[in-house]
Amino acid sequence: MIDGPYFVLVVLGVLGTGLVAGVFCAFSTFVMRALAALPPAQGVAAMNSINVSAVLPAFMFVFLGSAVLCAVIAVVTFVLWPDEGTVELLLGSALYLFGTFGVTMVANVPRNDALLKLEPGTAEAAAYWPSYVREWTMWNHVRAVASSGAAVAYVLALT
Image (cartoon, helix red, strand yellow):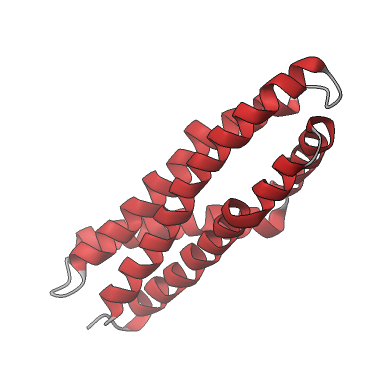
């Protein structure tokens, strides 16, 4: 059984990855649908505003903090190699670090940066918007599933 400070780390890992999963799930299930239903100029302007707000401390603390926590859990797991939960702990860390954080860096952030360079009312923005919504949302589904999987794996490690 995992105990002591290691237990606290894993519980915090469950909370962090679960919170991030909830944010991404909300975006995948209704936020992006609502934005896609707007005229392109309004959708682009709203998404750009969301993307600027997302990098403020409140969300970044949870998102980046969870990545650091998952990396620490992975390192501690490799060092301690506990009798139980090792596979679940390493799987949870990998899911978050690669499937959530990694996908964010290589798939979602570049799309956000490209969208931010466009003026919302232009023909270029209107032409890019449908593919942005489709591709960004698809990768966001991946992030939501990976974050959820990480939380579940950490919970399983604790049981």
